[in-house]
Length: 143
Image (cartoon, rainbow, N blue to C red):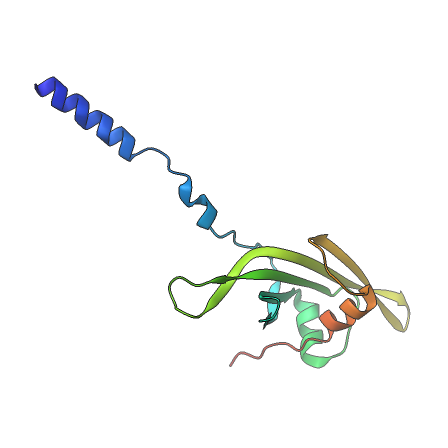
């Protein structure tokens, strides 16, 4: 009887410690900005998206002053909205929907030009309009 009870305990214990992957669907993937800083954030309730604009130090400076220089890196990451199960009626970022990358370079001595790239997802709109929209965002000011 003791052996049966011990065997039952071992089986129940190993079953309880089994790797349950049913919650993998609910895990959030955290976006790695690779050292870029948050410039601003905004949401679109109609499209149910949340966007974060990241940038390097030069991009952050231009978002504060409105004056662009070569070497700026802007990265706009758009997430699908997800319900926040811990706060009724609020939303958090879900899966990454798209990533847009804008970099600035010196076209000649007196002109700055921008390169536009979409590393992930699909975005509607002309590249020039998207560049202007991304680079025209003003930086959030934290006290």
